[in-house]
Amino acid sequence: MILKAFDHSAGEMPENIVVLADGTICATLLMAGTVWSSSGEPERVVSGPADAIVVGLASDSEGRLYAAVRSSTGTVAGIWRREAPRRWVRFAASETRAGLNGITFAEDGTLFAADSVNGEILCCPPGDDTLRLWLADEHLAPVSPDDPVSSTGVNGLKLWDGALWATNTAQGTVLRIGLDEGRPGEVKQIHTGIPADDFAFDSSGTLYLAVHPHDTVLRIAPDGVMTTLATQADGLDGPSAIAVIDDGLLVTSLGMLGSRHNPNIARLSLDVAAPALPRPRMPR
View (tube, rainbow, N blue to C red):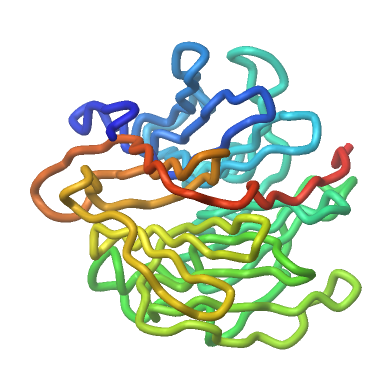
């Protein structure tokens, strides 16, 4: 079921998605530079440069939204926070070279951000205002700059079961990165052959992956059994992110690869456990 269709020609390409505690659905619209909400009109995150694109999305324990913005302008690149309706402020700066992508919070309020271009994970501890290098590793790196898939390294990020999990789209891997008192531990390759974008866990440990190049959503149960849940036939067109809801999944499609250019948010009805989201403390 297509819950919401968007206009590809206007840059309305839903890249990431968050569902707030009150049920409001929010999604970044990549090239439009806005965040769409099911409860109101899209809000422009940055009023500045034309090259600013809005990528990752996350929320904190008080329901405030944070959006990752890529830009060549130093005063724009970084993580922006919604302080009030139509009022966004920069929460943490990043280098303009950073290819920001997925973002997530740890329970202590540390913000993690994927840099897909440089193959790095950045972090911003509570009380800081700058994204800094947390981990650079060959498992996070892109493969080549030749196309949107091979040039996208570490992509989605989520905290689950005491570790930071990540996808690497170019390498087709799902990674588990240990946390050692906030520092990176061992990087383990858990799944291969899956060029996923972003993903989500439910509280049973079941993993749901948006596989952009293949127009599919995959489910991997805790015992490793893999199931295809949805395909192009269900309206997927370059699925990029997933949110777990009480009775299924919400999936964003950018409509970026291929020729259909049908960006949307699809709703998949299926049995799921409760959403598994970190409950971060207020960063500041």
